[in-house]
Image (cartoon, rainbow, N blue to C red; front, side):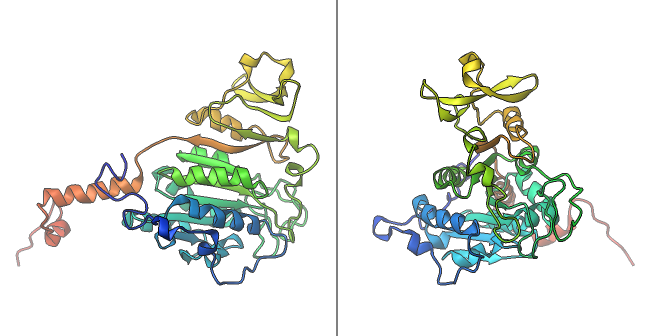
Length: 358
């Protein structure tokens, strides 16, 4: 069921779509605020990609809203010339849920970090995902608390030495992709901040998706966790980064003589394994299917904290009725039942009432 099925305007509505004369550019989405992140922060790359990407959606900036929580990434709304709110710690999904439910004409985005989303905000995140609220959630993961000066976060590696864990972290970290899949998110993706092409592609798919869309973005904190994803950017990254595309065999790495990647993902028992592509029959190579929940989860568990094999792209994308569409349908059903006449007292009395006689 979609907004159109319910007789509701789609994102942007008739008044939310710019005409040819009103064509927007990245400059239109750039605010007059000074960007105040540390030099070299991965947030700059994400901001640049989002500014370039938003005009391609065909949605007016006044019909676009960014809601953030607390953290370095949560300064995002200041730097975009759209509506936005720098809200409270961990509660951005909650505020955004109310907005998406009450305003179907808006494109609502949440910007959050690994600390904001997965620590104090963990409960709010998983319920927004399981409800399938029509939100686009960008989770910036730098594996550290940057704003509060370098404490370990829910995604920091075991043994991570920080100001709050001088002898090394004892906590086993969250895997944000596995967590989102466990919460039944209808869209789950991942990108690297420095990979503009992949990031823009995943963001575009998330924006087009109707329902809860979570995109994890690996990005560096050069001050408190410098080089945290360098293994994915340099050296042997060809055997580490695994880009997946729906309907295509999962082969990656430097091209071999056949013009295809030299590594492949195959089924191994109830899980997956990475092998040299020329050592297996091509029929054994797993074909990516965004609608296969079990495959998506297995891909999310393909690598551990050391980033040996890191999948990027879209893990899962399926269609379900959204919470906000269903909520508005209930409101309309109640109105129809009352023939358009609201009776507040009847609502307050409910089905069971007591009459007290003095």
